[in-house]
Image 1 (cartoon, one colour):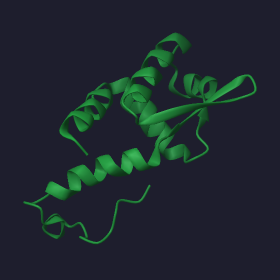
Image 2 (cartoon, one colour; image 1 turned 180 degrees about the horizontal axis):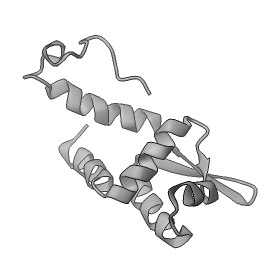
Image 3 (tube, rainbow, N blue to C red; image 1 turned 90 degrees about the vertical axis):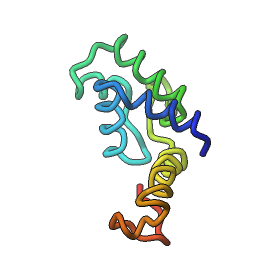
Image 4 (cartoon, rainbow, N blue to C red; image 1 turned 135 degrees about the vertical axis):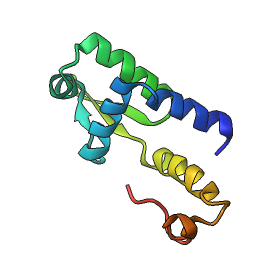
Length: 109
């Protein structure tokens, strides 16, 4: 992953509300969560949530899919995994085992 892409992702996650949205979507798994349910669960007005979802989607961390009249959002697993690997690869001078991370395993999502 290029530094510029990682920086865009970190910038998106650097806002408290967006981090909350992202964490809720991570815990929801691959099926994602309907935007209305996210709004209710996070006690966030739909227009505010829409702004944060757009920033996360622009960074490539989440994607929206329409099912009839409902819009569902879910994490983009391979992009999140790539971001985690980006951090892991430089951990402890390129020796992830020194950081308590196994060299031969990717982060699980």
